[in-house]
Image 1 (spheres, helix red, strand yellow):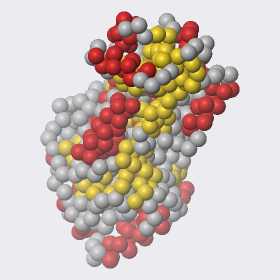
Image 2 (cartoon, chains in turn green, red):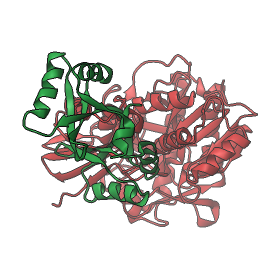
Image 3 (cartoon, chains in turn yellow, cyan):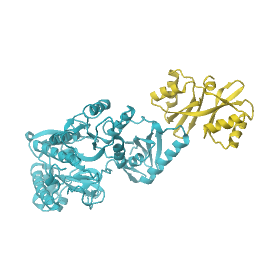
Image 4 (cartoon, chains in turn blue, yellow):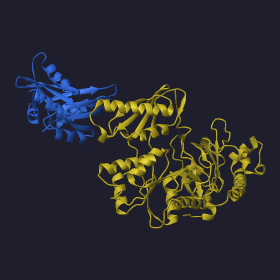
Length: 143
Length: 430
């Protein structure tokens, strides 16, 4: 199972972000990792949660604009150059990273990074081939 | 199909003779019975006998909506109060109302014009018309209602709003024809979509009449495509009976204005000069066949043009283009005249934005266009949204020559209209 990410369109309106987080809180959904991409007048909130389907459902019900998409989660050695080496692998394989963000928590000794590459399957293949720990959805949601 | 073939196909010459005869009557009737006109005639040093040709109409004074307001409630009445059977007031989009009276004959004549319009678009006995305009003081629903009954179709006086009930009525009674505002039609489409209804399979719709708000050709196409129906443009205003003044035939290329009932002129709104056919300007209408309230050269404030040339349907009554805007909807930004419909036209051509939009004016050199994105087309990518915003900005700029600020909104953010939509929010203070 691919790791699912929830993307949320947020218009530039006071309190809109906290409204979204409120919906998740009320549904008892814990956020494992998040990132916000913003422009001058709108933003996209990206989330990793333990139950993405449920999160999508409750957010949609509260009239948010939501999209579920696949991402890759990798375990990266928690030391200088750990992430750089993973990215170099992808660059060498001619795979583009659209965006990435990190988990707060670790998986064992490794830091967890969420990557969105132009092709998820090629990205995964390249990473696995080079021996990078690619986490399953179960690993990630359980963090 | 024709309701009154002889008059709808009348030769131009016979039509003009009829117009002149009725114009003379109208002028006499207004002069004799309405002090407002008598006063204005003497100011201009004219008398009814000075009207000897159709061109002489240019000698007559204009009537404005301010005049109708000033002489509210009975000042523009040409008959006694005992002779009138119905009162409407103008839709009151702006300011104090105008009172419009009908005698029994006026009610019937207005219905005749509607009957022509319905038959012209292929309505026949057995059709079911769901009338989603507001019943009451507004002419939109009642005038259509009477005309439809005259034709002999089943009329469902649903009025606007309560969309779930509208849908149930449409399904239960197999509605074939809608009379609806464009903004409500778009909203209805959204609700049907959300309910998972298929407009083609789950309904018996064949056509809709859209009126009371200006809208663009792109909106028509969008509605036609969604509902799988023919959409006909309808034009009217309370001061001129309401709907049925001008209506599209099945050619859907401009609205035939019933010239045996009205004389139309298109003028330059600033100078009052008459424009030749084909040129844009303000539509000015004179009633030719009304008892209670003859109105001379009424400034409609609607911007349109008379379409030159004959219509394939064979009707000789000239056509006007869809309403391009209203002189009072016109907004000026950086010295450029802009109609909201121009912006609507652009937005309707962009797939990823929804139907609802709003124009916000905060200063004289900046306008903000707020549009909702389409939920299904959101893919979570920032660059797609940025490209979308840039695309809209550029398309609007090339249409109106002013670069707007475009804001992308979440679907459902803008107020939904079940009546007339408020498209422009002007926060500028003088």
